[in-house]
Length: 329
Image 1 (tube, rainbow, N blue to C red):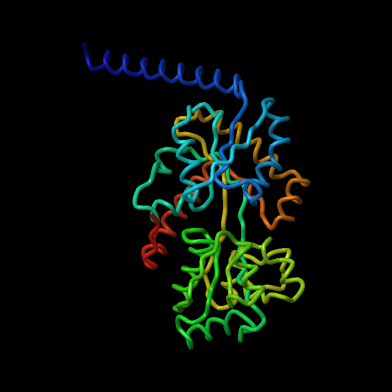
Image 2 (image 1 turned 90 degrees about the horizontal axis):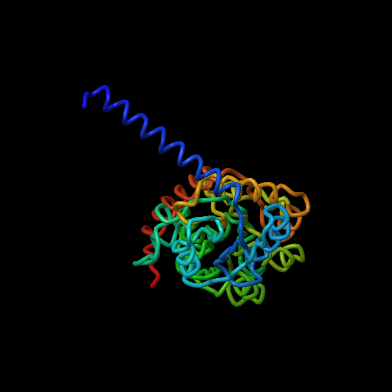
């Protein structure tokens, strides 16, 4: 066969394949969803991630025309639930709701992983960011973050500093603070943000880095000192509290976050449909208000932007974890 005929045949084959793929994608999209959608939430019931997902469910049920079922599968920093999603059929009917740990940091924390985020998942949409706040007991001899860091430098390894547990976003945020400020705290891990806040309130530990819902009422009541928030910008609920960057560590930025992923191979039109419906829900004023009342900020956006964010977070936390020599079994 001549080169010209070969090229023509190849072009026709490519066009035929593209037509078949387009037809299949259109058929999948027009038929999606054709059964209930299972969302594997990688945290226990009652936490911010679970509550936000359940806020979205009625809206998604209405718009998708099929029931959305929340299935809580916590464990191993999100690895248990996400590993189930990675093995599920790539048809959009099984999705995972993962957070910063499972989708970005765990690959650097655990010696073995049951999945690879970049290879096993297709990002669907980021849902929310969870800013943290650094709080202290009033007996701590520091009125602001600068004074706290000066105290830590003067007394290395003596300031007790609580967080929500080894390997959590709060732990990594604490490690980043230590590295950027060149200080060393006595890290005190807890099983969640609430217990860390309560022990700070009771004076059992001096300082903690916790999520906003755990500490907000105690800050407002003057029972905890709010040194700084960890996000890039100030928070509407604590407008008087500076960011860590403003308070003396320029460039510091660390928030918890979570979003939805699908098994790799899920058709692009299905991803686009899910992304559109989730973003519409996140932009609903009632849902936005409910999320913000939890101390959670809705973050609508494209699947591509979420993919890029996961990749950048993976690189960022890998360096922090390596420098801090943090390992989990």
